[in-house]
Image 1 (tube, rainbow, N blue to C red):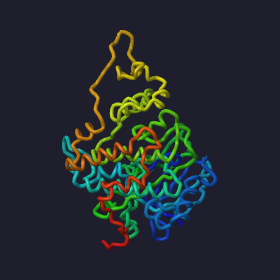
Image 2 (cartoon, rainbow, N blue to C red):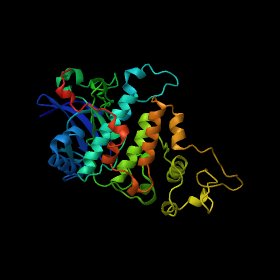
Image 3 (cartoon, rainbow, N blue to C red):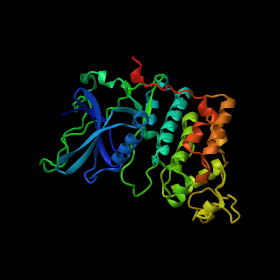
Image 4 (tube, rainbow, N blue to C red):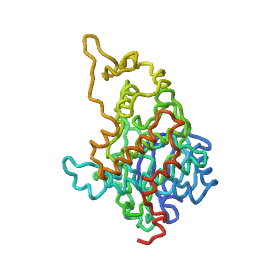
Length: 388
C-alpha cells in the first residue's frame, strides 16, 4: 500500500510525474511512465544488470530500484517504477546552499571547491563503475546527479506531507472544461513540485548517485547541447566516450562555475557549437572538418576562420569576427577559487579529456588515476553508517 506524500519533481523524458510516497513506514519515489511505455523498460533491465554484476557498488553509485507495477487510468496503463527517494540534482542544489543566501549582486553561484571536487570524483567513480560493467549512461549531465537524503525515514510524515491548498499555491485549481463537464482524462488538480532540499545532506561526507539510466533510444539527442561530443554533432554517433566528453565539460563547469560551451538552442545550434569548439579547443581534425557541411560559411578553403556570424555573411554585410577565447583563457577569466598551480592541473586535465578523436580520450578509470583526482578525498562510508 502506497500513501501519496508529495510531488518531488516532474517532466523527465518518458516520465510525466515523480510523486513521493510512503510505503510500510518507509518513503519511496515513484516514477510514472507515459502510457505508451510498456513491457520491460531498458532502464529496469540496466538496473537489474547493475545489481546482478555488483550489488554493493551498484547501491553506492546508482539510484536503487525497489519494484515496479502498472496503474490503469482513463488515458491508459502506466508502468510505475519504485525507487529510493533522492534529493535535488547538483544543478539545483547549488541554489540552496546557505553560503549563497541572501543572494548578492554579482555573486558567483557555484559550489565551494571541496564540494565541487567531491561531486566530480563521486560522479567519475560511478561512471567508471558503469563503463567497467559494459554500460554507458548516454546522457551524463548534472540533472542526473542527485544528492542522497540519508535520514529521510526518520522524518515524520506530517513534516513531509504536501499541503493541498489552492490558496497557498501548493496545488493548482481544479481543472474545468469550458462546457462545465468533468474531464475524465484530466487529474482533479496538479501538485506543485516539492523538492527535498531542506532535508538533503550536503555537509562533509555527502553522497551523490547517478539516476535516469535511460529508456528506449531517443529519436534525437537528449544530452544538453553544450555537453554533446563532436561525433554526436557530426554523425549522431553514440558510444561510451560520449560520457567521458560530457564529464570533461563538467570539470570545467563545476570548478569555474560556468559552462564551457554555452549554446542557446536555435536552428544554427550545431554551427554555433562547432564554432565554439574551435574557439575553445582549436580546429577539429580534417576527418571531422570534411563532415561539416556548412563550414564554408565560416572558414576559407585553407580552413582559416573569417566569419562567426551564424548562417554566413548576409548580402551587403561584412564578415563578423570576434576575439577568440581558448578554454584556458575562459577558465582563468572565471577566477576559480583554487590556486594557480591547481588551476594549471585542472586545465591540463580538461585538455586531456576533451580530445576530438574518441579513441584518444581517457577512460573513467584512467582519469581517476590522474594526480588531481587521487588527491581528492571522498568519504567512503555512507552517511547512514554514521549517526547524526
